[in-house]
Image (cartoon, rainbow, N blue to C red; front, side, top):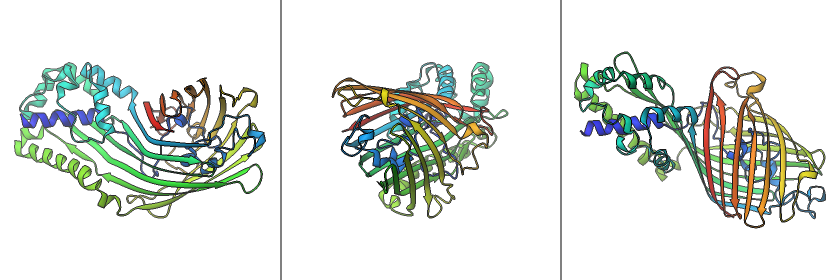
Length: 442
């Protein structure tokens, strides 16, 4: 019985997973505002997210909407500073979650996301809590799992749709973000992994790609050396953990013995425990920290049109043993003044286009793989109380959207969807995410 319970927990981990992050890429803060408008933000960079995409944008805070500091941009909505005490986001793979629902019946996705948000990797509850349709199919003796699947061809057919396909879910938490005119800092972390199921030939197996966690503290400053130009420089410390891949073949107990299978379970449990209790301990967090620089520039052509460029994640040394490719991106934006308002019913509308990841050789060299285009609108509905936003666009050739609302400046929520290319050419293999984001601050 102890053995079958461990398998239930393992199966849940493998079915639900965590977000996979490609090798040789630096830490990436995933703003839903940005991804939800097609990832085009390099020239917009007008709030705290400038820290992550273009530090020169910090110069715009309390400059837009401020007639005294910049009369030409005085008609844009103004915000003097931004302080977010906690921001939590979770991304679920749309197609894969749909397949899991078809297999399991009615899994309690909310409970699963709750455990992921709090980094509870090792335990996800009994199978009856999340997969009622198959809870009676797995045998008590795992040496008979192949026979059980043969007796339930319908389950084997459903599981085949997930064969060696990563089931990816991402989580991100920022515990402090602050941005004001020409200065900002933040502390944040995200986690990633890529579990999969191997249907096998007679013997099913489970595995996961390297588990990864990034913990980052960063700050940035900006200034305007001459009229219409803004320059920003950022500094970050980053710690990355990578847990090697692992595969488990419970059917091996039929050809060897139950001790072999139990050894595999014990090894898996030990690796999870080490990752949580050792790797994430304060002692290890402060060891082998890496450092990087970010650079950004903005040029205001007219009060409605702006150009931007950024070079991010310029690391001084390898990160978790990998050489990091800096992210070089350029962009342009337009903000028609006739559509803006900084009255009590403030409104802003932006259009943008970026060419991103110019130096990244792992991205397809096709034009659309690097092109992001999008637009967004934000409107105050009730002064000082409620504002809503809507964004949309195309990121690397795939549509993206997000919608959100803010209660005063205290609570903000966003929901949306975007996709990433996982093939070798544009449009070959779409991987779409559903994403939700909640933040509390001022």
